Image (cartoon, rainbow, N blue to C red):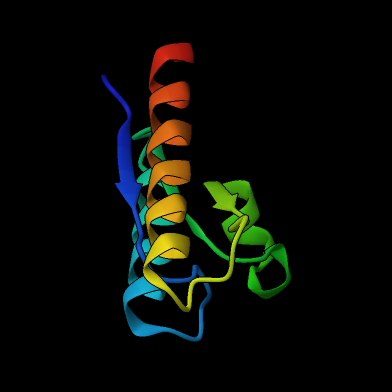
Length: 89
């Protein structure tokens, strides 16, 4: 079975509703044996051990995201990481 890749645009933490849904869904899919990967911006500080066990790749933004250039570079970072993971797997 091919792995599922979820790309999250907002910071990956359990405090946000959308990101926590993706984290919970990825961990449940891992329990069922479905290979899934969640890619998004954030820091490792807000994640629990279960989130670290499921495949979660955190992209640390190079530039601040308060302007359009910073957001565009973050999107490019996420896309490059997703392509790299897809090619390796």
